[in-house]
View (cartoon, rainbow, N blue to C red):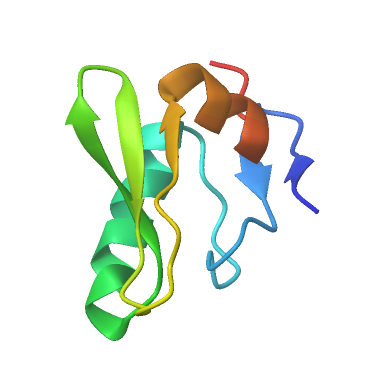
Length: 77
């Protein structure tokens, strides 16, 4: 489960590998970098709407708004 740190940053996020992120954009960039090693990541498909990218053959399509991702991952701003 994610946990918000005093300064508004979030730690213990999925696939974060111990890193702490202070914005959703930082976290999404980190996930995208790891996509090269077949980990799931989120890409923006239209302004404020994201699609989860997973390379598995049985991966379900999942979309979320920016606000939904911020809430899901515990970001305040």
